[in-house]
Image 1 (cartoon, rainbow, N blue to C red):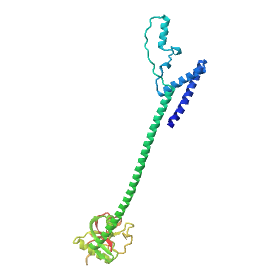
Image 2: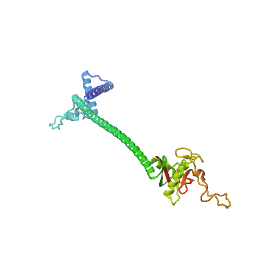
Image 3: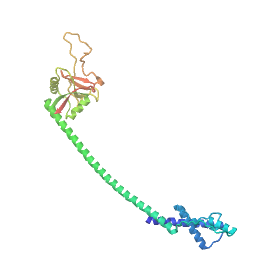
Image 4: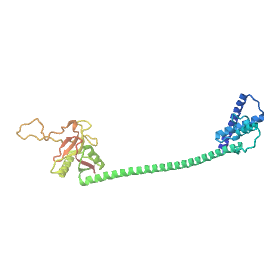
Length: 324
């Protein structure tokens, strides 16, 4: 209701001022003089006319003043005057129309205040719905925050579960390597009959808690050779070791970064006694390593335990090493 009174206080003075300005301009054009009472009545009539036009209300029939009828006389009055000039004839019955009641100033103000009150009520309903919507949005935001917290806790629990599973798999792989493989001191070796590239084989050994085999001396080499010969006899299969020279050609390192100090490279068979020596390499078993930059990973032959260099992407058996 405060907004309704405020809008009424703003609209009515402007309409009064506008009607006063129009009446003053019309009076100056006509150049006539009128009494203050007539000016006040005409000002009120003009104000009511503008309010009716602004609100879309029908105009009063008595206010219509066609140009051909000065003094505010209507068509019925003109016809009556014409009949009076011709003479008195027998009276005729003229149709009579009751004019529709014109709205007064109080009606117009009441209508304006009613419309403003309706607008105020509508705005109140909008505010109520907006408040309910804000409350709902706050509840949804709170629920979303709780879901995010639960999701974060679940993610942490899942990560902890994965870490526990990884530790369990490494422990199980270590125990399996030492139970099914061969043990020497603080090391256990276990052959895997899966074909993998050298990097993939290293990753699978690490996932099981170990690494590709890294024989550091002749004793470990002999134990590993017997294990491979027993597992793969009577065939001869190359098996990946954890030895490579990927960092620099000719610089062989273990997977843990330590430099290799013991080698068991394959050598071509010596010529038979009395045979003429040949400078050409043996076509089936040349001296190793002979691959240069194309073969940077080392595999061990399962029959005699000799080392051969191979392309690291070649898929071979591999042997893992586990701590004991």
